[in-house]
Amino acid sequence: MKVKNTTGKFFQENLEKQQEKSNQKSIRFKKRRMSILFITVILMVLSTINMISAAFYMKPENIKKHFIYILAFFFLYLMIGNLGKIKRFPLNYKVLSNRKVNIGVFFISIFILLGMYIGGKIGLPFIPQINGAYGWISLGSISIQPAEILKCAFVINLANCLAKAEDRDFKEGTILINASIYLLVYGALILAQKDMGTAIHYLAIWIFMIFMTKFETKWILRVGSLALLLGSVGIAYIYKYSSIETASYKIMRIKSYIDGLFFGNYSDEFGYQVKQSVYAFGSGGFFGKGYANGVQKYSYLPEIHTDFIMATFGEEFGILGMVFVIALFYMLYHLIVITGRESKNYFGKYLAIGMGAQIITQVIINIFVAVGLLPVFGLPMPFFSYGGSAMVTMGIALGIIHNINTE
Image 1 (cartoon, rainbow, N blue to C red):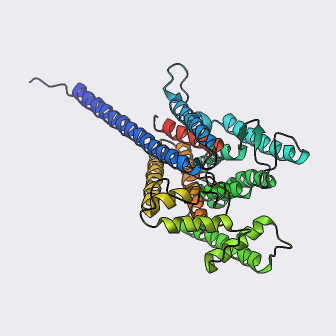
Image 2 (tube, rainbow, N blue to C red; image 1 turned 90 degrees about the vertical axis):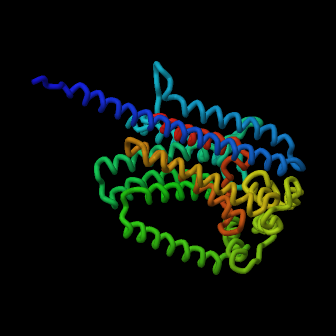
């Protein structure tokens, strides 16, 4: 009787199945990369249209710079995203999980932030005081905000910390303590520069990433309840006991925020921008006044092309336009979360989640400030606000996401 040899056939079929799965995964990654790029291009087009409208009557030269910043963004995005495709020396995101690289990123970041603080205190001419903060390096016509760009470094350090905790199965308390060290160091140095808005954004990123760990619901409820209690007590104290004679400008802005949110009383001295921004959204209605028909850009809302850029967009494109932009950002964030979920290691998971958190929390904070639901923090709107540092940060963040999607 002749016996058939089925072993070779079995291995051949198994190999074909593995190859098919690999091809499907490659196709899925490619579609995700293209989807992220497509959404990004749409957001860039909208931001440019909006910037032209907002800056036309104020500073036309900002439009030219905005195009330069867009080019810088795409250069970083595509360069970092495709480093893993280099044949001889491929570099993918995993190099950032190397212990020496992680330590180097941390100490270089701390050195820069500490240098900013010391330079501002001793009065270095290229570290000017802007709006009471020492957060900028000014080199002629070029200004850089290191704390903005170093958000990516903060995410890298925190992703390494949380990935290590997962690999070694640390308890919740240990994870919280280890992660808090990074927040305290970065946060303290940024607060020392008197840049409360950026420090609050670092805190938002930290909270977001912590809640994506293996923390049980009871831990989240404890931390959340404590934060809510302390925040409520702090705001109540500020509102009751602060006065123009004794309180700082930032404290008075928080008091003005409470007056505006609960009583509709916006101070012309401390809440003027928010009041004008709320007027812009209100007058825009559902469909908006139409492109370039907004009036807040006629100097009613100062520096409208920066932190309050969405006031122009809301006034001209209405609630419908705002919903469309928010939906685009949500889709972008959703794709980033899927990227983290499908990553082969914990570091890739937390790195993607952190970069996504960096983007979505900044969007939420900026819009909430613009409509008067949060105090003014001075955070730019990703893609839309004028500024090179924010564009560089976005280029690095999405470049890393693109890189993860090529593994």
